[in-house]
Length: 626
Image (cartoon, rainbow, N blue to C red; front, side):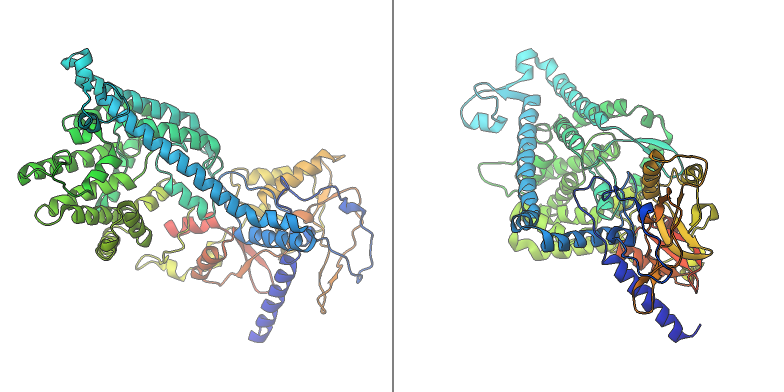
């Protein structure tokens, strides 16, 4: 085939794709599909060259809602949304257009109010419960120990009420009870997941920091219920117990990311994973024992300690001993704090309680920074140290600088914080490529494709020369032929082939040539509707009808007669313009298509449109991780 002929063929394919995409119409309010009331079998039987007024939905296929743990097709969803907006602008009232335009702003305001109230409630609850673990102010139980003393009131410890021998046991027992409450509530969010290989696992959306999952969702992957109301409520309540028990979450720095991977693998092979509640109780017991000796760790949580470390010394406030004139005492206090928090965070990593990495990372970095700055400026070095450790573990840059400035109000320190963050990120990248969130995504086997990263093959690997035809998957049983009658039994047999791969689908062929593609969930939904009205399960009751192709002048003309009345036309759910690449296309190009276009599946064809196979996003990510 000449270069001119290839360019002409590609231009015709693009024209067909643009024409089909521009005709997509779907309503946001529909639960699953457009109106299924129209009977496609009642179409007139036109002559071979007569034009057919193609229905807009039929032009490029109906779509079902995404099932759990499947990839989002941003291309199709974007086209449907733009078509919905065009239809609303053309046919809707001014009031309907105004409401539609205001939805985003209303959602933003509502989200801000709800998050603000929730965060305030968590903060107030944490402060109150932490104080009550150590004692209470006699005339005002909501006052802290220092506020109580400054107001001339009496601070009563539990040792004063129950006896000195009970002071430490009460503190330890309260920590264990709060941690136990948190993990029991987390267990209420349990959900079963079925992987592509058919394995059943139980996940707990309320556990952990959830940033890895949020990154995966924003990257185009459906995790139903993870951002739901039940998860939010259980996470909030469990987080209050977790914070007040003194538990630490996360590990710090690039070297520790590798350690967390080793620790996670060890816990997988040990008995701790079988007894998660016992694991939480044990960690809470050790945490309370290590936090009890000093007033700083006994009365303040992770956020409170970090706030103290970022503060300047004042004549009337020794900051729990951090402003003592004896630098040796301060050094020993900070060194002990660093050692205890690193140890506690190490054993806390991965246990079934809610919690993230930011606050605990700041605390460790602030301690190290304050130690370095004992002879110069403790506050400045605490800020720089906190930013450096967070950059090393999260690999954040601009957003991290903004967070540190907003938290501390240190606008004059923007430049040193920026330099520290960049140096910490470069150092972390040189030691281990993945951030703590990336390693968590890989360990959970989430299909996340990082758009900010260059996906190069390993040095000396032949994968750099791989083409789409080398990596694509093909199974003849997972295809359909146009104008061939299929029984519902045959449809069910084909559905069973991909029952554990919700992201899969079926190529629709005319001989060996690709004419369309239907996703697994769309075929499953169409089968449910068709079988409900079927008269015979074992004989041909459905087919993919080839209604038309583009004529030389761009009009749609028939290629075959539609005479099989009484059957279901599955082509109304078929994508007539699937995104395709040539089999000789490099995998670098394919990866760029998945990252930049945001598609779910790419079909691979040879010259002349002969079908070679399909590439799913999950398959491409698995290939990159090999």
